[in-house]
Length: 131
Image (cartoon, one colour):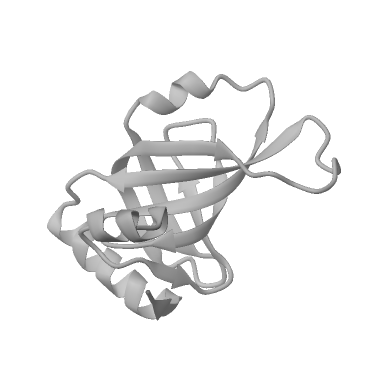
């Protein structure tokens, strides 16, 4: 069985692909702002630019994210989670210099009822497809 099929079977929630201009801002880490790659009720993945000298050990701590649509600023604030993975994204050129493009996967901790409602609305309004 392919690895992607195994991962899909292990997930509790379907992943959705965000529309353009949908981002994440990490309140409690050096990550800053990243571009959402996919999201679900259980977690999110996003790409961000990181200076190569940054200490990635800081990612082992719980963090808080704001998910938002850039044009309207609608979204979910302060949703807590833990880093499941953080890997460098291979690239063809060296235009970023000392900076690295990374992809980070976050598993949400249990959101409160208001965040759950916001997250459901966010997924419904700012994703283009379910898969």
